Length: 387
Ligand code: FEO
Image (cartoon, rainbow, N blue to C red; front, side, top):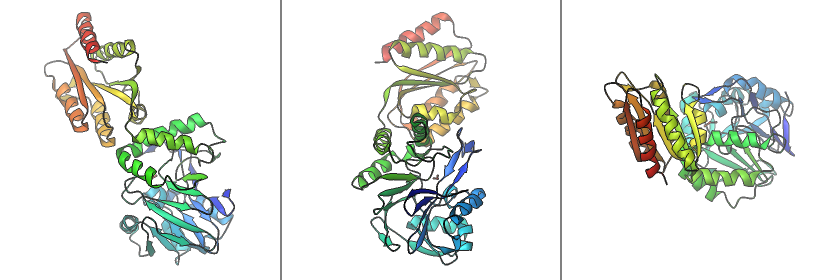
């Protein structure tokens, strides 16, 4: 275990979570990292920490630079436990250190750890010095929790952005110019769709408030550090946070005896003929977090389920619950599905669409098994409604 120098006197001392495959419901197929940063100056500062079970990894990396008992300040940009989990151990080793956080951050740290550490509250625009270096703060509530903030280090032109600009990606190659960019961007997009999307308006505000900062490096709390492709990730954040969509349609469904699947394929044909990029996701084989990654810029979302007893299938209900929680905006929607003796399926799917404030374009239900003629009718009707 060693520390990775980012700039003179600034080190990455985080931890790689290679085995992580589930981050509160999000499938993290490439693991993740928790990025903590150590700044050596007259006073020594640790920015963020790691999940509790990787505390030793972080401490080992810190010890290659300095004894952790020498830490004077712990800046907690965000109290969620993937970043604060090792703070209790750091504070045992350095009990006189001061924990710096937003007012909501301090409230949350107290609620999580029940400790009365030395706390210092900061607000947007506050600065403090550790000797030759200074730091300033920008509170970014709801990117991702009420407590989030960014820490900026003007002397090194580094923005410590915490969850913003992160990716769930474990890599020993910690910079964006030494790891395949297409994979980084895919993971950044998936991360945005599954973690950040509910807070689009707060992201736009944070981008606006930070646009005049002189930044060489964006050091997030997950994944690789941006030192080359800053413009690209900032542009993508502007697009993702704007609810802008492309000519793209998703068809998401589950099926009992193949009837709803036949309807899904008929709907697919219409979008394909209309020149849309179309993605079809059977929920038996696809993870909801991968579907959300594609929904980030899809104009249409079509959701199908048969009626199972008196409800939609649990896979579809699970997806719709997850999706509405992430609050995609300005989407057009279609409900579809087969039923035996009660078509609650359509009503229930439409209720989720109403909750999401989607524009419902049409809904299609078929009793038991769709015949060719019925499928042709769906195609002709839908074709008229799709621009
Ligand atoms: Fe990576 Fe909101 O924690």
